[in-house]
Image (cartoon, rainbow over the protein chains, first blue to last red):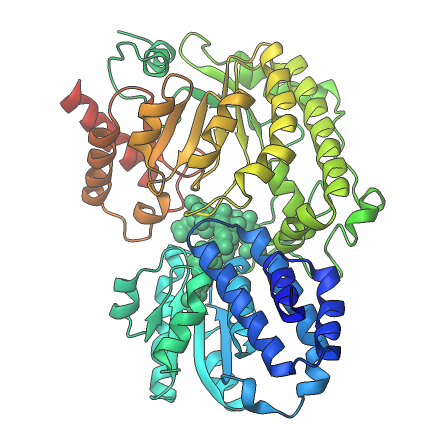
Length: 209
Length: 326
Ligand code: B12
């Protein structure tokens, strides 16, 4: 197996303790950092698809994401300053009135694995805070809002509308258990994904990437 | 006319019920036992019986465990013994008086004197160390997780002993949410490894000591876990959400387990609820899932609703369906 294929395999199976060494070996063998990163991004794509189809579950996804981040740590110093790999900054949070964050955290991991620079605002985030974060961060291309309670669906709507009023061109993606494509359309969100596995491809799709 | 209990038995055994079982009507939950869960007031914060800090911020619809680095209970799973202390289970006779009186007042011909237990084993793992850590530790530190679950299991058995000695319950209502609305948290294989043996012990113990029916709450998807539920000794799965193929489950497993729920609280239990929508939902549930091995109800894990009136409106909708279908 090539070194890159081994890295890929270790990420997919969530072997976080072994990934760093494998990435280093791959670099030593002459593989380019960008290629290794792309391979890891592709693995997370596979992991996401398997999660969407119900083949794997949250723990498998968490350990895969953890493994990827261990690999990325090795690449970071080498790729620092080389902005080419970033898809832009994405601001994410769970909307006001809602404290659930497991789904949001998974989406953060998947978007990060796909190449976005993630800014996680946490939970119970008021609509205005998303707007402030757009101003405070560079190259923000996407806002992602999560809501798990039916009672916080109006807060989701408010978040989308507040962002759109302040930054008319900003793309917003929404999700969470009670959210549907219809609801996303109704509140003028640009996109919706039913799970973390499909969130990255949806995000890229609405950004035309 | 069949008593509430007799009617339930007809439903569970595939006999001839006279009407739908109306949500929680067959369980008289004895919530006044001295080891009841501690909950913060709105706007307040408490440290509960397991040492978990729980906050209920103003403007939120419920409370939440605080899992920041400082307040999280289990800071290192390998050293869990340094962090975890089981709550006290020994209480004076005086402290038991109210619960004993409550149990004595129940007409056991009509209803089951029901013991209540929450959180469950899986929930405890994430309450003490936060969900992500718990889920990853099943992979990364399986031995420590097994030890921890054994410790919780022993606690549950000790709890059961106290409750059995004092109120002699006929039923157990036990919480443990095993999934989100579209999937289980753990793969069935992992669930089997970590939780099936533990629950077999716990539910077996209650049953050896006079409990006739075990009702387990998980308001989630959990269709793939039903064979394990049966193996553990669960008689009624309460909280079955519509994301499960309930008709198929009833068809396949009805002989061994009864399904309670079929109307998702999230859909009908809201500030602007209406009787019409609730009627429509219960009409769908009752007609699709039928009279046997099914108990119509909200998925919520107690005989309550988040918004006043919804639980009662659901009862009314079920009465209407009973009149129509029986
Ligand atoms: C675990 C859980 C909790 C944990 C949360 C721990 C945590 N740190 O988040 C605890 C126990 C603390 C909790 C507390 C409460 N909960 Co809760 N909880 C759940 C439960 C069981 C699972 C949610 C979950 O984590 N799912 C797993 C993740 C992976 O799935 P997910 O969140 O849906 O996310 C996926 C997708 O939706 C999507 N996604 C999510 N966000 C986004 C965003 C974008 C942009 C995209 C693209 C995709 C996306 O991707 C994710 C990954 O695939 C659900 C039950 C259920 N059936 O869903 C109830 C549930 C959500 N909770 C509920 C309630 C009522 C509460 C409480 C009020 C209870 C209380 N104490 O009184 C409090 C809430 C307080 C508050 N103000 O928020 C209700 C909500 C009902 C309603 N009316 O809407 C539910 C539905 C249970 C029920 N049936 O009654 N809860």
